[in-house]
Every structure is written in C-alpha cells, then in structure tokens.
Image 1 (cartoon, one colour):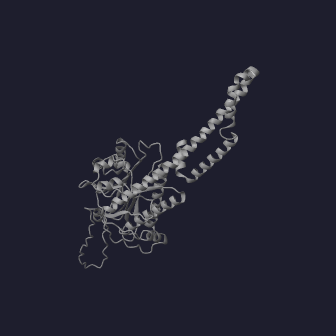
Image 2: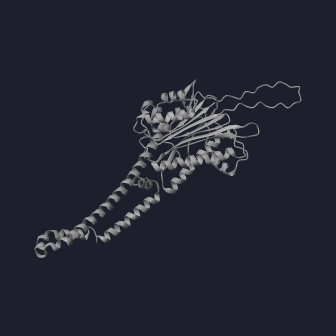
Length: 445
C-alpha cells in the first residue's frame, strides 16, 4: 500500500499538494495539542522526575497512576512528533530527488545534442531530406490539422543497402476480340503476427511501462483489396506509473489517428501512408506535451512503429526501441537508429559497440515523445516482399539478447510468428529480465 501511495504521489500533482497541506495542518494541530514545542507534558515530566522520592514519601503508591499517565502521554506525543518529522523528511527527499533527476536528464540531453551537432558527417550520410508524400485529396479537417502540425517534417531515404524497386510496365498484346480484358489480380501478401509482453524479473511487481499495438486487416477499394497492418511499441519514461501512462497515451493517439484514416472513404495510397504515420506520431507527441504542461509532469516515451499498406512498409522511430528486418538470405538487420547517449558515443568512437550493453548511462536517451513540441522522427519506407520478417521490440529485449541470438531464434521458429515472439521473450527473461519486455513479430508470406 505504501508503494502504491508513493507511485501516486510521484504521478499526480494534486496528491503532492494534498499531502503537503495535510502535513501542514497536522503540524499545527499537534503543536496546539502539545501546548507548543517541546510539549508541555515533556517539560512537566522532566520537572517531576527529580521530585519522585519526596512525592513517594508524602503520597506513597498513589503517585504511580498519575506518573504512568504522564509518561504515556509524553511517549504518545513523542511518537506523533516523530511521525510528522519522518513525513516531512520524506517529502523533502522526494522533491530533492525529483529536482536532481530533472537536472541530470537536462544535462544528458544537452550533452547528447552537442554530440549530435558535431556529428555532421554521419547525419549527412543517413538523413538526406526528400520530398514529402502528396496530400490525400479530400482529407477531413482533423487530418489537415494533424498534417499542418508536422508540415516541416520530411520523409527520410531508405537506410544503406535498401532501395525501392521501380514498378515494371508490361507490354500488352493487341487483341482482336471485342471482349473486355480484365486486369489480372495482383498477388497479395499475408501477415502472420506474434506478440509478447512481460514485465520482466526485476520489475515484475511494478507497473509495466511498455505498451504494444498490433492491428491488421484488409482495405477494400475499387481495384483489389489491400492488406494493412499497424504495429507500434512504446517504452514509457518518467518512473513506473508515469511511464505506463505515457506509453498508453502514445499508443492510443497513434491508433486513433491511423485507423480512422485508413477506414474512411478517402483512399490512402502506399506513398501517403508514411505521411499518415508521421502525423500520428506528431499528434501523440503534442498530446504528451500538453499532459506535462497541464499536470506539471515529466512523462515521455519511445516509439517504434511500422505501417503496412499494400506493398509498402513505412517505419518510424523515436528513442531506443528498435525495428529489425530478417530474411533467411540476408539475416538480421537493424533498420532503426537508437537516439541514446551511448549510441552517440559509439558513432563518435568514444566507446565500442559492445560497451552499449554495460555502460552506466545506457538508459539515457536524447529524443522521445513528450519533451519537445518540435519532434524529429526517423522515418523511411521499404517495399513489402515475401519471406521477410519484421521485429519490433523495446530495449528490454535487445539489451538482454544480443543480435546473433535473436537471429538464431527467428531462424529456428519462423514462419510461426507466435512461437518466435514467445521464444524471444523467454530468452530475455533467461538473460536476466532487467527491464520490461515487448516484442512484435510480423512474418510476410
């Protein structure tokens, strides 16, 4: 119960104010009952103790009952004053820890941004802006508002070694018949989904800060049905209950933007799906920023997301949650880039790649939802191909299970996505389970 109160105290600003006011009035009441400080009963007891021999000679055993009552009253007041002092000390320590944690986070953020500003060569090779996808004709006012909020954002190119294959135009033989020639139906891929979510071993008795979303379906249109899928993992930041609320809000807003747009009468083509996912993440970020401003809080979350529409995969990433691709031919490849302090240190040659897993500041990230209204999102698209598997996960998986082991598990369990996700979660638990674990496996066939 005490732990639950501590979590609520750290999460809700009104609980802090209520607690402080309660302690203040309790102190005034105790001061009045005690007739000042030190309490009158203590002073009277100290004056009485030297006189006990004389009182015994005069009154005899009759002094025992009043003396016992005086001693009991003194110890009762001592108990309440100690409780009050303990609560005051706890409140001061909580506030001090909050301020120190905020200062450490801001210092780490400034350091990481400084490293990012100096790393121009890497940024130019990875992030070259391209033209944003065209606007969907006939968008609703809600969609227009979301898009305008992120109109300065651009879609980034594919990572190295990935490319979009151009559409091949096949020549048609002339027909002498008068019958209408019906186009051949395009081959459609199917998605098999496996998910895994576990609080981990170390945090099994605390709120789970990870959240995931996996939705798939079919979009009906005038030509042929298109498969779609929305897959999101969010790892909350800000303390157990705070992180839980942050990841929940992010998942909720991304879902509430993407799914209605896909199911509306306005057709979303494969190119515009990337812009839709970007709008959704910007909307989630704006919501978390408003929450922090309203409740004087400091919650945030990472997000890694994949939106499949037709034969295109749009991938977005903020923070240190990851998206991988796997094929039997090319193995496991990390598609996203970690926005963490240790990742910057690796990029600048300050530490080795293996040091990421043991570095004391490995959990510090410099980019997340909820901390800035202007959010940079790593984003790119990739054509959907058969026999490809997407893996989305939080750091609770990849910190406990190295990439070669992840590849071995996928190779052994696929094409069964459910077994693959279960095996990955179990491997993270076997590796120590130091953090919350969330996994989404999407197998394309």
